Image (cartoon, rainbow, N blue to C red):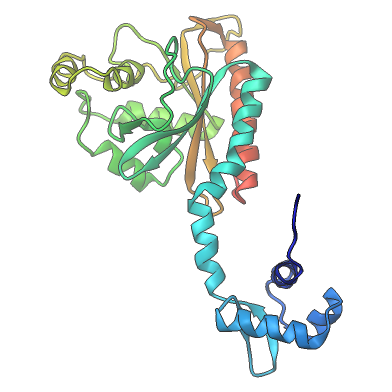
Length: 294
C-alpha cells in the first residue's frame, strides 16, 4: 500500500513554489498563503531549508532558491535521471520503425553503449549494453560531430585506430553535412576500413594481440563510408549501416547519440530519409526532455 508523508509533501510544495518563479522572492506570508500552511509550520520548514542552503533568506525576510540545489541539479543532469528521460524515446523510435537502435554516450575517453532496442549491430545478437569503444578515429565521428569545433579537432588529432589520410577535408565535409541535415548516414563499404567493421573487431572477444594484428592490415580510412551528400534519386539504393542524430543537454552540448541500425542489406534513398526523419524526431524530443535545444 502506498504511504505518504505529509511533512515531506510540504517541503516539496515549498521548493516547487519557489522553483515556479525562480527570479522572484517570497515572504513567509506569501508562501504560507499560497500553500495554505500555517505560519509556524511554514517558518520551520523554510528555516531548515535555509540552514541546508536549499533556500536563501535575505535581510528583507524574503526567500528564494539556494545554491545547494545547483549541486543536486548537476548530479541529476549527469546521472541516471537524464537517462531515464531519454530511454522512452529510444523505445518509441524502435516501436514506430521496427528497426534496431542504440543510445551511446562519451565517457572517460570511450564511447559507451547505454541502451539498445534490437541488435546493436547488424546480425549480432549479443547484448553489448555497457560495451566500451575507444573514442579515437575512425570511431566516434557521430559522437562528436555536433560538438564545438575544438572537440572535433581534439578527436581528429588523437591516436587513430586505423591509418588516416593526411587531409581531414573529407571528414570535415561529413561533419558539416551532418550539422546541416541533423543526421549522419554511414554505409557498409567493402573497399575501405569501415568503422562498423572496426567496432565489431574490437568487441569480437579475440585476444588483443590478434586484434592489433588485424588492425595493422586495415586499409587507410578515407571516410567514404559516410554520406556527405544524399543522392537525389529517391529510388537509388544505399548499403546503409546506421543513421545517427545528436541529443543535446540544456547547455547545448551533445550529451547522447541515438543511432538507427537497419539490418537490411540495401535501402532506397527514400527509405533512408524516412528513417532519418524518425531518428531526428526522437533525438529532438529527447533533447527537449533534457531542456536542450536543437
